[in-house]
Length: 157
Image 1 (cartoon, rainbow, N blue to C red):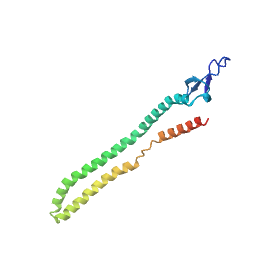
Image 2: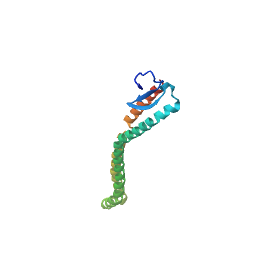
Image 3: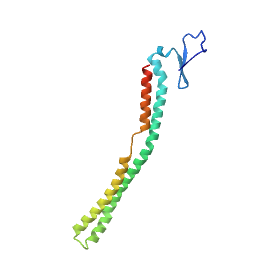
Image 4: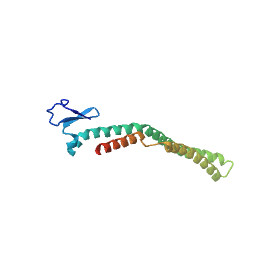
């Protein structure tokens, strides 16, 4: 959108103010008469602002995903610690208890199987949470695509 100085005065000498997005960008010749350098100088701050806003949007959109991923990682770490502690203490206790009724090697095998089952359940719960997470910033991707389409439209003019 362009606004002319003096609103139609005869002494304009072909100069206009180019206003885009409600702001005056620069005074100068018709947009078609601008050099590439002038166009880049006009677009540079807008592109920087756009990139900053897109980055902020991506951070905002990915924060909940990051929190859930952190929760899942914590569950997996807790599962690993839990399995290790069980492997040490419960296996010894279980082996000694079962060794009263069974040969010692059978008692150790039964206890190990139980510990593997508990660890597998915890690891499965953490992995299930990780599989359900969608790490794509959908809004950011959509707005970036809209920006690319808008820019292509501006370039083709």
